[in-house]
Image (cartoon, rainbow, N blue to C red; front, top):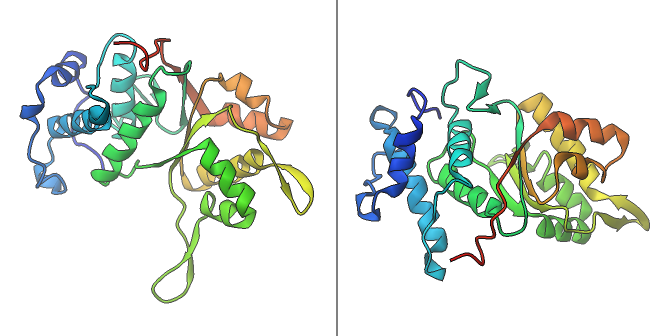
Length: 249
């Protein structure tokens, strides 16, 4: 689903983040393309952002550390300005890697976009999974995990296996052990997974976004030479300026 609109003006986009929550629109017509409203989608994003923080008594803050990034991601995921290969600094064909120190907000931003895009049934919607949970899945059942995060073959209503691969965001790569034992042999499960995701990307356009406190070059050191070049090819990195939002007031 694409938004039929010109690029979002920077100041207009930020102005929406400053509006009070009582201005959030009713979204009963959001799935009707004829009534699609770009401002509604931006306000819906902010509504999701504030709901994510409501339980700890905070509201989402847009500042100089994340303002441009949020704008760029919004245009990237909604494929705004489709006449160019690059959408506000992002190559729309590549995958996203958000990099930054612990507590800078990279996971939260991707959680918000995941829920926002899933709720609005966007073509770019993705499922966010922590690296820790993926590691557990691979350790518990390697064959299941390779299918789940790869081609995702499932039976349809007629009992026929069909492929349903999905866009994925792997959260917090770089903090988890990458080695598991399969039939007694040590295996770098992340390399196996990323090889499959690379094939999905090149052949089907299925995206694999990641967040990490590592740089793209540091991350590639976890892989063999054949995978290093693929990682460098797949990803465009955006670094969030270092501020620990967990401890800041």
